[in-house]
Image (cartoon, rainbow, N blue to C red; front, top):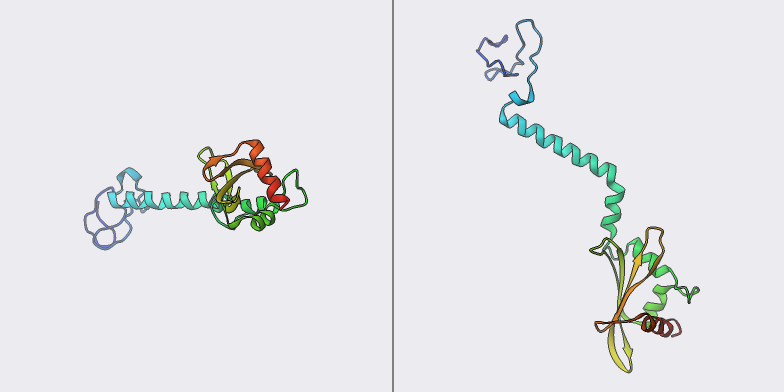
Length: 176
């Protein structure tokens, strides 16, 4: 088969002439349609890469809200932290947790993360005194999709607290 523009011989699987770049047409004047399997390796790779980029962009557009919510976990000023800080405990409905904790503890720090079992956890760390000794306190809250939460875990200097100890600690914090 020959190129109709320059006359150079071209392969039957080529869509464009290697010599002049003209589009190869069949003897009846119709443009030649080349199947993917007949494309050169470079063109196959290019098409695959372009297709993958398109799929990634489509996924980001479609699932953008979900990806955004996940990326907010771990952000120090995220909505999950705000849910806990602005919320109140059942026994102390008129006191925001954030204000009470930040008034009671020294060096208050808040963070959030996704646990290994995919729970959204907001963690508070701060210092205080216990029996006259300085201690480090860690309190974790599990935040649910409906913006409710509950105490998930608490410890003082690495020692886990039971429910009674947690309630006693809350009593001390909120009556401070």
